[in-house]
Image (cartoon, rainbow over all chains, first blue to last red; front, side):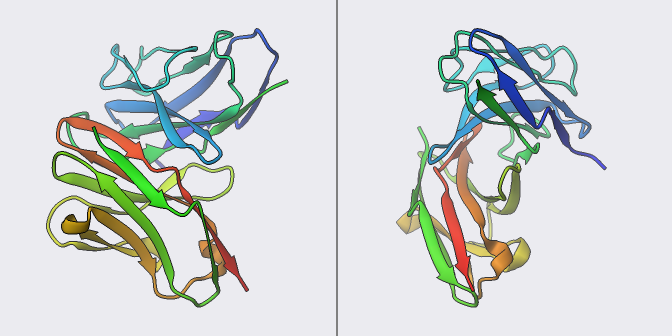
Length: 114
Length: 113
């Protein structure tokens, strides 16, 4: 079955550490996105990638980094510069950039700072 | 800039009662509108979408929504709530050259037996 796989489902980080969240899709989608979800805040866009080897900052990119070396993969690194990283992180994809289509979502990664 | 306002962060209904979740949007171009559902600790699943054409849109699980341009609204309804409808619901908008989805803050639906 086609879909988006995020791993791990739960992740614990010590303060001062960088951690990387994995996102892989086998939908052959061009565009991929990372969202952060906090209670009562909805989804906020961290980074997005229109096509492989290209990405742009979203609304809350500070303290995060991404790469898009392969079409199917869009990992997110939460760096020590992110002061409040505890949240639920969602990866999504759309078939192409340039169309107002719905996004397909992974199951999320819950990151907790300990 | 586009934005979404979901009225009511928490809605509680009895099983079998009407479900009404409100969504108002702001967009300078004809909008594309979406409703998503999220069950605890899971990703988002598309319920329905409005792009062009018929303003009454039917989705999965018996939900529907009506696009009202004059009211800039896209409210989600279901005639009879089921216990399995308990979840968080998000309204989202995109439009024009802004292909990114902008989400509302969500409405948590509780269904009481």
